[in-house]
Length: 418
Image (cartoon, rainbow, N blue to C red; front, side):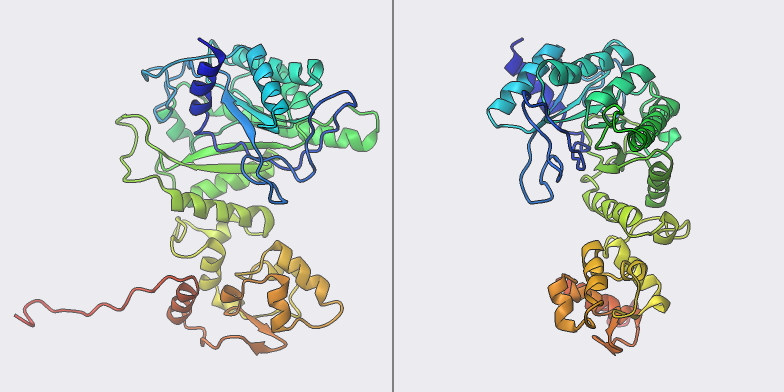
């Protein structure tokens, strides 16, 4: 099979992996090398400065020995199979880079003979690019669960980011839908990577002659949403634990897309894309806004509101917290206000050093006033008088977002107009 035929098959097979965006890597290329990463980061779609970034996103192989119910590449599926050699991936990456098609490589793989064999081939790609080709561009490698610690360590030395897909939110779901995979085989390499990242940072603080950073862009993971019955609360608690215990950079949520017929899988009218979106918003609150999973959801209300974003939904449930005086609230409190983000909160704190914040100044700072005005006062004056009535406040917020609230329904008694 020609390389271009393999590329068509293996790039298509990689499209279901969402966790290929990244940021925070800064790799110094050798004077005689080629390629570099920027401080704003390399990502699959857009960089921090608005540039569109392209990665060569492929599988090393789709010839899998596992039979996971949700995976298009499972061994029982009658799909066309292909596998690259390590040299073919290196050549493709260099050719695409020289033609300015890409700025980096995202490489994953199905499990071929066994995890170590597959991981060895992937590490060989990264090693050859770095050592032989002097490639300084971005590399993201997926770790195959069950691979040896030595191979994982080598992957982290050559790649900017490495990741292990947790895939499903619970061990019960993993046993039912992917019985050949074990929870320990996924969590152990994640913990190992977290320790190596932490150790590498400490070593570089102690000595200027320390080895290059281990996985300088950190580690990430991905889980499928909707293939198993876990609630949003369970998913967020899992993500919260991963961030705290595994030194994780980011969790990616992938709405379940049915690609196989299997009695173990749910029948969905469409992928749960809105749920995926709300989980990303809630995840942002965990990572940057100081929220906990237990604040966002609970056992009594285990799923995210489809109507409002998670922060607005939290604010509506806690009217006692508002209104907040914009000229006195500290940074942490400002982050609790709908319509105020990390950047605008920092700008408010900085601007108050010179003069009180005015309504006009808030718009210039970047506050989304159509949401924030219901939850704040400015020098003691409220922007909107809603009398804190939840129903009225909800309807006004919906109108601000361009969504018409449902009209009240007329109660009709059976036989009244017969």
